[in-house]
Image 1 (cartoon, each protein chain N blue to C red):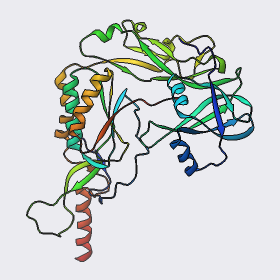
Image 2: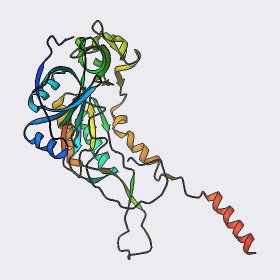
Image 3: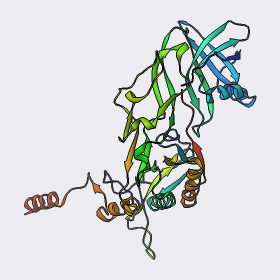
Image 4: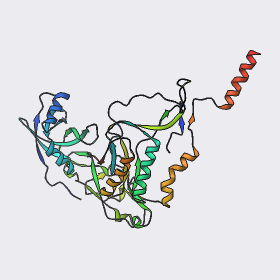
Length: 229
Length: 138
């Protein structure tokens, strides 16, 4: 398990003009709009260097020392990310002011290592139910990643949150029985490929729930004829 | 082929495909995904063709997730029919795909293999697609 030994520092600039137009201009200039809030202080709109920030985020950084130009240096936690329409480019970051001794809930990436015994059998498929885990810990003890040793599965076919070796002072927010990874078996290749064909053969037309059923139609006709006769 | 089990109305108006996808636009279940960068209707037949292409290529490895469902009935008049006489019967079922919609996801295979499988699926799709991985999480 890797701990972040030193809190990374990042320079930020105050945003005097906020809104879509000014945020777009900032993004074009290679900066990322962000906001700092929390600890009952007024929120501050800032911008950070996009390249530097993305490198830190890809490294799994959660806590930063933010030096706002012309203001105090603050310890902040990456609270939320906003993405563009294709869902992967970061367009805005939320930072929350924190104390290093404060307890917080954060998502930490799970890194899977090793090969479980059951996965070596024919037709076995290893599925990862979750690739990140919500943990509760002190700000100065947030792990960079959590290593999930798949060899711990042994002869079994499921690895749960309870099986993960978490660093001291870190506890999982999820139930210990929550699956992290499991193995499923495919019996025959033909079944796997042709499973949808069966569905097509059985159900040609979907059931229309608002349409009158044949029995109801007869009743209404009978009532109509009675009325006319 | 996939289609709804129960529906409220037999036929639908055509509607429009405006804007970008705001839901289902990131890799949620697998490790890698195939994302649409155009808007189009994707028929149940095309979805099925993509699934078969991927599963034949991957053999028994990994898991393929289909993130779109054809819930829109598309009607078509029979050939050599005069206009009028009401809306025709349902010809096929389609999924509405907007730019950003995640079409397929693959889990449990290395990146290069997933990329090759997705390329095979992309050939079956009526839209231009791109290969994506999981996005950042905090």
